[in-house]
Length: 86
Image (cartoon, rainbow, N blue to C red):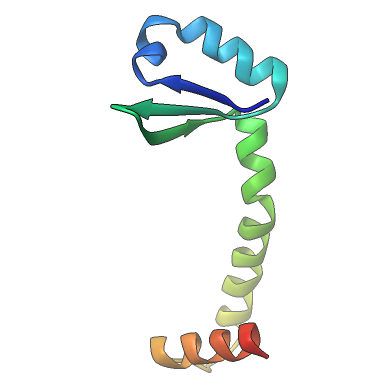
């Protein structure tokens, strides 16, 4: 079940929120004045979300270091758009 809490609970009920995040393995969404402001998650959750991106960025860094080819921002985004749109 999705947990949505006011941001003031982060200050007033931190141990409870921490326990919820760690026990459930799910993020807690924080709101301020009725609008979403933050998402609180465990380090394990964050690592799981970013692991593939970090690995691919490392691969791209190695490929760039091994090549003299450089693309402009426009070329990069044109290629990315072409791949997304087929």
